[in-house]
Image 1 (cartoon, one colour):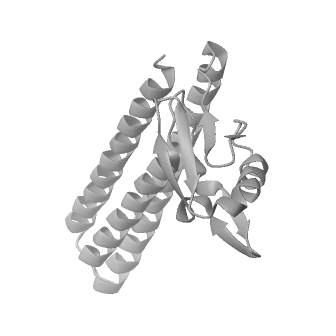
Image 2 (cartoon, one colour):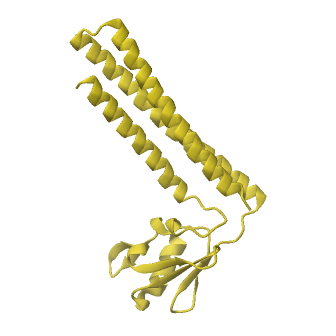
Image 3 (cartoon, one colour):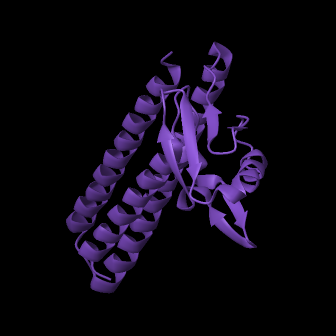
Length: 186
């Protein structure tokens, strides 16, 4: 593996860590209705586990309510069971045609709890990025031995690895600050 390949590979892994963080944040409930919260709801559709969003239309009604309109009205009870089983923290209300999920406003205490979760998830992502940095540094040492690189080239590449790490840690901090602001906004 060349140094360029190692750097590209490392950056790709760091990018994946940031994308994973964003996906994790999408499922954290704030006071607003967000269809992404339904991503973990899987309905038993005639014996086949099927994601809810593949079998219904989901729309946001007034910022606080999600309206789920199943394509097949006969499975509305199954969808309700799956939503309860998914432990979304919200009770589904059905009128036989559509299901409504009304997101209650979060209490200050709950907002602070969620904010702590946001920080914990961002710390986990930073740890992942630092682990990638360590792996890159190890790979650099192998390349150094194999190709007998001069000391200044090794130092330059170590600096590049650190700058890359700093860049992604900063991105994680920005994403976390944005999510925290969203959670704390009433």
